[in-house]
Length: 314
Ligand code: NDP
Ligand code: GFR
Image: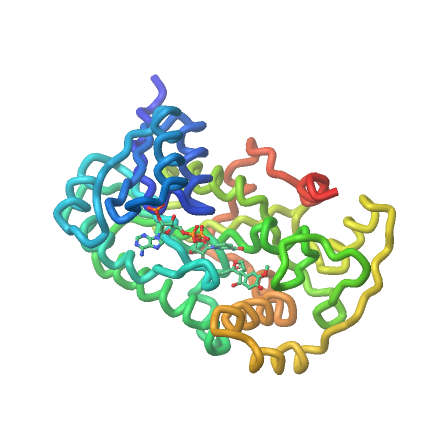
C-alpha cells in the first residue's frame, strides 16, 4: 500500500515560483491547499488563478499573514508547508513576512516539513555578499534561524538560476528576451553557472517534501547538462539561430561601477550577478554532508535542458 501523500499547503501560491509548486503538488497527487489571502482584494488575475487551482482539485484556505489565528488554523489542516513568498526586488520582496508563518507553524505544532522561500543562491554561503544585494541572503538567513530555533523540520531549496530570468537574454540584465546583434559577456565568460527550468524547481521541491533524505538538509538543483558558462549558453543560442552575435566583454570593475547609476532593485541585482558570473558562487563549492543534489535524488525526473528551453524563443 503506497504511503499516503502528505497534504501540502502553498503560501504565495499565485506567484512565479508558487504557481509552479502548486502545479507540481497537484501533478504528484498530493492533497493540495493554497492560501487565499483577503488582501488580494480586486486582483482579478490572482483570484482567477486561485479558482483555476480549485478547478484542478486544490483547496483554497482563507487566511492572512496578518491574522495569526487564521494562519494557525490553515497550517493545522496540512502536513507540509511550502512558502514561495516574493523575493525579486523589482517585483516585490516580502521574505521577512515569513516570520509570521514560522510563528504559526511553531504554534500549530503539526507540520512535518517546512520549505521556506529561497530557491536561489544558498544564503548560508553568502556572508561575504556585496551591499545592497546581501539583503536577499541576510533576510533568508533570519528566516532560517527562526525555523531552526523553533525546531521546525525543514528543507531548504537552492535552485541556482531560473532559466526564464537568465537564459533567453543570454544572462543580460534588464531584459528577458534574446539580444539581436550584440551580447555583453561578464569577464571572459568562462565562469560555470547552474541553470534550471523554473517548472523543474516546482517538481524537485515537491519530490523532496516527503523524503527522509532531505530532512533538515539543503537540496541543490545541479543538473549536469545545465551546468554552463555564459559562452556555452551564447553558443547554444547561436547554433539554434544560425546567427553569430558580436560579443563585448564587461570587466568586473566596470560592471560593479555601473551600480551607482541604478535604482535599489537593480543595485541588488548587480550584486547577485557579480557573485554568480564573476565569482562563480554557484559552482565554487561542493555541496557536502548537509546537502543533497536533486537530480541524483530523483533521476526519474526528465529535467529540461537549456537547448530545449531556448527553442520557444526562436
Ligand atoms: P513573486 O514576486 O511571484 O511573489 C510570490 C508571492 O508572494 C505572491 O504571489 C504573493 O502571494 C506573495 N506576496 C507578495 N507580497 C505579499 C504581501 N505583502 N503579503 C503577503 N504575501 C505577499 O515571487 P517569486 O516567485 O518571484 O520569488 C519567490 C522566491 O524565489 C524568492 O525567494 C526569490 O528570491 C526566488 N527567486 C529565485 C530566482 C532564481 O533565479 N533563482 C528567480 C526568481 C525568484 P499570493 O500568491 O498569496 O498573492
Ligand atoms: C540565482 O539566485 C538568485 C536570483 C537569488 O538567490 C535571489 C534572487 C535572484 C534574482 C536575480 C537577481 O536578483 O532572480 C532573478 C534575478 C532578478 C533580476 C533579473 C534582477 C535584475 C535584473 O536586471 C534582471 O534581469 C533579467
